Length: 281
Length: 317
Image (tube, rainbow over all chains, first blue to last red; front, side, top):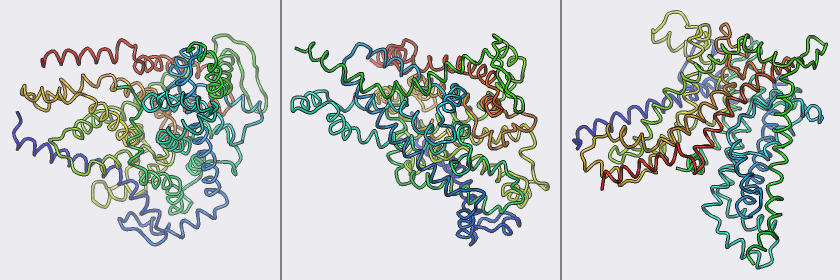
């Protein structure tokens, strides 16, 4: 048995470590916000822990910059991320329901196949993917960033686990007896039951697609179609020393703050969603 | 009656899973076959001229082995280890603290929210942020100089050690919160009876961690490890943006995917194909391990854990 004093020491130690780690996580974002609110001249003079008064000026400079179409980039990223989140969750739920509620010959084979490719990196097929979409005339377009998310094995697995725990098949039977068609049963009865799972996965696939850099950087060529990560890379490649540093910090703010805000609003569900259906314990 | 029903409805199963498989077939399987096919061809662009495709057999594979590929594989591994070791140690520590009721951690929800935050940040923007913060006239050097730790600004990105450490720190910050939450769920899945029994037997917190918690969460620990390796294999955004794709200094932070990206950008399809096949084989093996862990009928993960649980129960009883 451990003494009370020892436990007290452990409690204090744990809190110190937690506070240090939290400080590490927040410190960089604090500097980012502070620096994004200062002018180039102020930034050249060295670091100060207090924010300046140039936040709006920097923001306007970013919004009106023609060479770095950041606002256009955000719009593109929004289009890509929300469309992929929508079709990814809908079709994953559909696939999961198809494999859960029906019995057919290839059921086990299909399930095994999806489980086998669960964590296959997309990069290994990038070369063929690039050639394929060029042949299909879809290069330099947002479509190839959206459509492939119909097949998302990890989201499927999550949906499948969720169905196992919360959809009694008797409900589907009852709907059938009431004369509901199979598609209608899915859209009007199963989908509403799956709402919590869909919400969590929609957030994760939105974030994943918002942050995705590798494939978009290969597909997109023209500036007005670039998504935010490509613009950030462009910014890194530019001769940054001659630029307005306040503006550069503001561009990073614009790239990451929308996600942080969404996260802070939904953090409870997001954190609970990290583990749901991740692994069977 | 029941058999008739399954026959009647089975076509809907196929219809519902069709979009997934069509999309997978078009956007993953065809590209994969294409990638493998061209890995056996000499097929690249030199200037405006296109060379090939000419069949060359295994030549691309051989010349990759002679090239810097192994060096980049080493880089990827080093960068991954620098981030992963502290990540898993801290995650295990935090997870066991969070579930330990006697520690009475205050503001658990706050800490969880904060440590998970970096996981959602755009890796490329995070790398750009680190690049500006740690540059010669950036705020970190400014702070270090003003508190007198250094007279000259430290050029973090000039040395291999500095660049690799920065990548490691970023990977650590981005992933330790995620691992903590995964492992926490695993520890909470252990039956409280076992912990209670151990306490009655006079087990202290260190023994409890090494003799009960660690063995009991082995399946999820293995899952976390393998998915982290797969994630490490894919490492790209952070070193790419931090070093502007150069892997500087002297390509010591060039990862395998950065190497692949260079071949794709220069349209050397033969080499890119062969490199992809190498990556495909490695990730295929890792996928197989994950498959074994996540499926119930495996005999190395969950069953082993069940056996251990039984043993622990027997010991208790």
